[in-house]
Image (cartoon, rainbow, N blue to C red; front, side, top):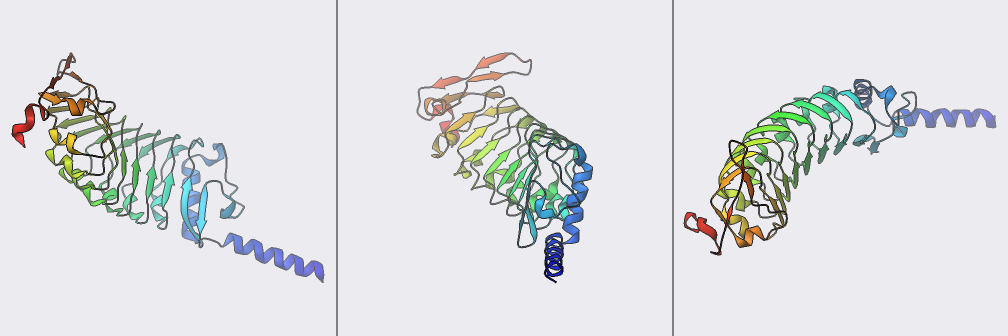
Length: 284
């Protein structure tokens, strides 16, 4: 009798583990596993075991709230089904070999706070639906092959603190709504193909600490208002085609480099103005 009771308890416990998330969420995870060649991952999932034992999957109150499979040899594409994990707060697939496009329906991850798909082989554009993830705090897509413009409504992401998109092939002008991100602390857009000017509205980014736009195709004057941004510590705008003079106060920021590059690829140096506000003071 004791053995029977033990067996029943063990069976019940096993069933409860297997049922700890919905079938929909489990199926989405399995689709992710198969689409990224799970059998060759560094740390694999045993699909016969409870989801609670699967490496990198965080479950809270019977819901999948986190996936962290960074540097785990994921090879393949990101399936559209990943967007069915509606309770997901973190998706971290950093440093793998994921190719193809970011799913267009990724905006369905309405609870997502951290998205890190960096250091992969992703191509295509950044889906506009990403601007529907209202609680997104960190957007990291650097070191991919993404192209096209930044979504025009990126300013809808009022809680964004980190935008790190460097080393892609992104182009176009910075959207006006970008300057509405008052909680933004880090804006890393270097080594892309961005064009246009830096808007004077950049002073609206009052929380900004790190600004990196180097190695793009931007031009025009560098707004003096950057000096007024008290939290701004690191600024790198080099290897663009900016013109005019800059103030000594701005040059004093960490990482600031006066080297620019003209349309022919020839380097030149910006002038430093002795005027506290530089030559742009009249434009205020």
